[in-house]
View 1 (cartoon, rainbow, N blue to C red):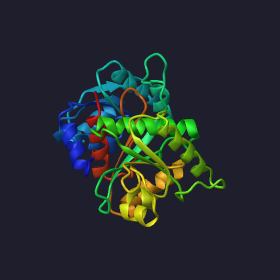
View 2: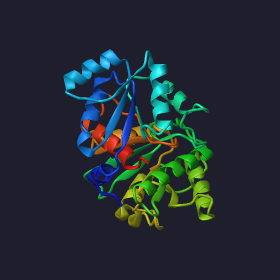
View 3: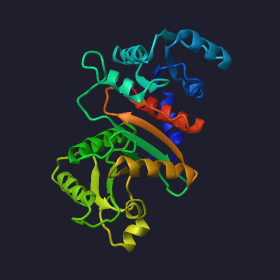
View 4: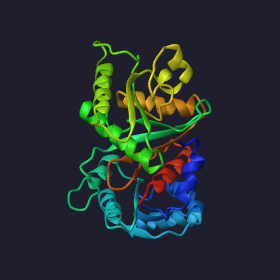
Length: 294
């Protein structure tokens, strides 16, 4: 069980990660790269060379550059650097997310594995004694059952790579009882039964669970919710992108927490940071990707 991002940062230090930055004209992304150089993380910059060189001079940085004329070329070159083994982490800079993901999913030279691509946020807040994974608040708008299973598998895979042997997964809904008028609870119950029968492996899974009794042993005891996951969840699987997005941002803006985000399901970790993210959040996200890089 991870208790803070400092533990992830320590893992990242020994990985010798190399980031391929698509659209490296973005000075905020370059600042984020500079902020992780003390971890031994390297980068190859892909984009408009004259603009990038000017930013590097302003930031007092020296990094290799691959010139690209436009964001399509930058995305393709950045992905090819990873698929060829010259880099092992992909990061979005000044390119559209859709353009970058189209390159990621290219059948010839992309990073596709056949798995669903999904977003996982890691949260560290003062009120919880452990890192909490939240998924999917960034990619799949309203996942169906099959997509939720893919989302779970990606989150469990990430947890395994970070040292969790059997992560505890909670399927979150507004209530912890099955209600036919609330489809989220029905789907959670179905997925929970699938896990009971061994169709979802590598984790302990339960649902539906409310947010309170998934995270708090006290709340679980008061509501008489029993099981290995109740009160001890590591991974929260939310019903849709809205609830995941709200939950992640509320941890930062209401609880003074820290956040990191990553896209899983490709053959290498993908970093897509928001320009509104703090420098600490960007550092956490890059460290997270580096920590699980091959």
